[in-house]
Length: 449
Image (cartoon, rainbow, N blue to C red; front, side, top):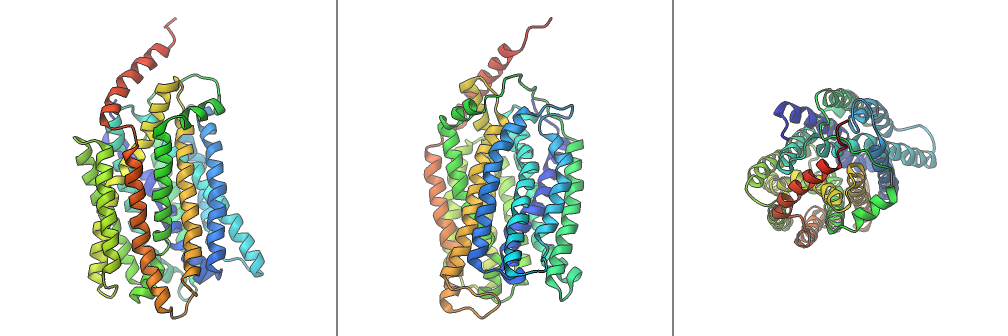
């Protein structure tokens, strides 16, 4: 069953809203904590890891909660309506510098950032589970994911292009107030867009009546090779994303020598991802998703290595290389998320039980673990290379920042390619799976009275 472009766009606007928060956190929060809030890099890394690890554990519970949710609005859509205002408040609190001692500020950062991550999941986990309930067509899910990720990257581009400008305009010389006001504005817009997504989407894959058997369902998932490959791939991808995304402002401030140029860079790389998403839609109409992912990861890994050798003062080359890297990263983005729904279908076919929420949240656990691990590693790497906030950096620190932006993500791409060789759900497997699933669901329907 295919869905209209209007509904796909409405769904996609939910990820535009998500990325008004996620992109702000992944790009600006580490810098905000070290250079504005006043924390040490190692402390920040520890905060990021602890909060995201707690959030990852919370995701597992959310999966079972989603699978038990039955309302007149569906399983997943109600979370967009009711949880998004709470998310907005937590975002504002996170980007607020409280008065008090250093110990109090550290405790405040732990609490507010953990709450932000958990409320983000309360909205985002149901949201990313929705494709399996909106349509049962694997290719339509890829197109749905493409629209979603197109909107997500637009949100990231808005954040990258406008955040530093809004901080200056809204805060003037008070950068702390500028960040707080900027996040409040973006969070408010995000709530409105989540509500649009809620209003104009429909869960049309009929819910299955079944008893809650969380342990049994989880064992079904982890006995599938597809689930393990998705989990490992998520750790590789999101660890690198967290490290490099959090290092962009440091790279431009201390390596390039002009932090203001980061805004255009973030816009350019976002444009590259958008191009990659469009290419992914075209390629997956005829080609196997798994093979396309392998090709895109290989090329982006090679381009990351090239980034190491370019002159940081040649800003045009920095922009160009960032653009082409993200084109190939962007190809993999909608495919990766459509694979989550495919993994859920694989588990249903093996067990006869639908577990959309648990499959999504358990794979998201690996993504969150990767983000937490990347945040911790970024903080530890900054400390290891001798980074000190708001001072002239040593040549060793400058070189370390270059390595963080190039060699580390290249290594992650090697890991992704290796994992994909063992991923079992190629296009032939998916084409075989859907007719069998439909037949099984028809048999499971109760006979008409």
